[in-house]
Image 1 (cartoon, rainbow, N blue to C red):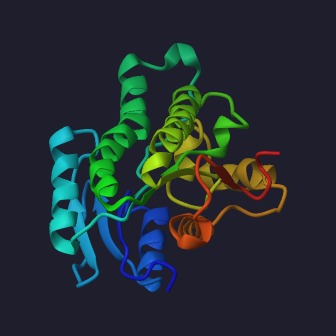
Image 2 (cartoon, helix red, strand yellow):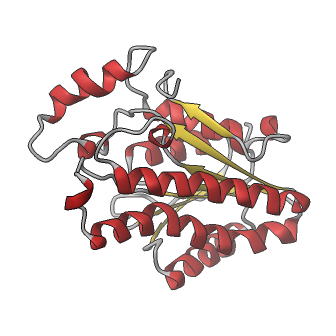
Amino acid sequence: MRLQDEVFVVTGAQGGMGKETVKRFLEEGAYVAAVDLNVDGAEKTDRLLPIAGDLTKEEDVARIFSEANEAFGKISGLVNIAGIAQSATPIEEVSLGDWEKIMSVNATSLFLTSREAVPYMKKQGEGVIVNIASVSMVRPRPGLNAYIASKGAAVSFSQALAIELAEYGIRVNVVNPGPADTGMLGQFTSKDADIETTKDTVFKKSVPLGRLIQPIDIANSLVYLCSKESAIVTGSVLNVDGGRGI
């Protein structure tokens, strides 16, 4: 029970990585506020509180943390998994609206959630934030210009917070997943590509260990970074990518 009685806000909780992470955190004894745009089908329990909200809206983010704190009495940590993909698109075909949407969801939401979480953590003298970025910001692919920029921003922002918040006992780290076997993976292909074929011929073959990353791989890394086992780890970027970033 590495997360016994700690309280975590997990965003993107209805996605592949999110569901597995919520499951693992509950197995490790945590209380979880599971946040997503739509939480239909998510069942409330004494340790699990589904909360619907738009992470790009300040008022929604404030409400999410208020509800989590009211339900569980504290906020031990924040795990930002929520994000959106970009289909492979030449830069000249990327609209300003597309760019702004990707940056808003993948980068601005981290600012809003972290800004809301930090005061709760400062009162306790400890806390942990883990943001999901992507190994693509280390090893870019063509056509994912806005997505990669947003994930680079996520890493830089996280490291800036790590140094700022260290004196308060708050740790901030990043996980860079490699190509993961989730519904989002197919969204990175060009619009006319065969998704299943691309998974095997492009994404899987790009991983030196020979398989796609599974949601459980990411969830296990998040358990570690949120537990006392990583008590001296902050400002780190953990590539969970099967060697893709090499």
